[in-house]
Image (cartoon, rainbow, N blue to C red; front, side, top):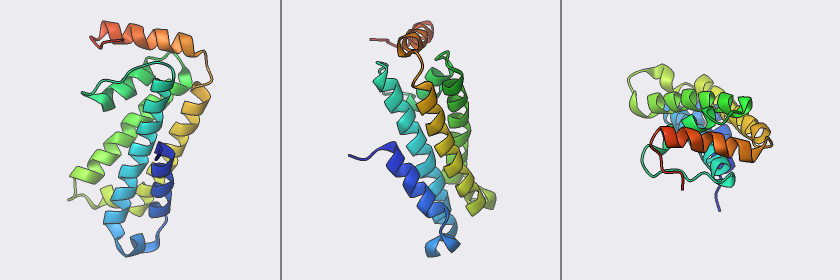
Length: 148
């Protein structure tokens, strides 16, 4: 089974290829995308592990906001970084006119940020999971998300 870490490892391989392995900007933009999705899937797995069901709609916003409302400082930081990484992914995927959105330097930075997010998830995931779960569920209830 593939994991978020598999995407992050792939992002690393692509981000360090000289000249993008012949694919240049397209490879680096794809590396940025994989960095985001790797970190996103790791965050979603953490939420699942603590008993939070993610909705089908707006799942990307939900995962970020759930982390930011967990009451754990590491998970809150991971949620903020995930939002920034998603912005980079959106720029890489949708704004093809701006060359900077597909530079190797950005691909390497996004990979580094994805690894940092995973470290924060690991650290925060060792906190009191019941407390995090109840805080996230309280936030879900206030914001109209089904909590069961």
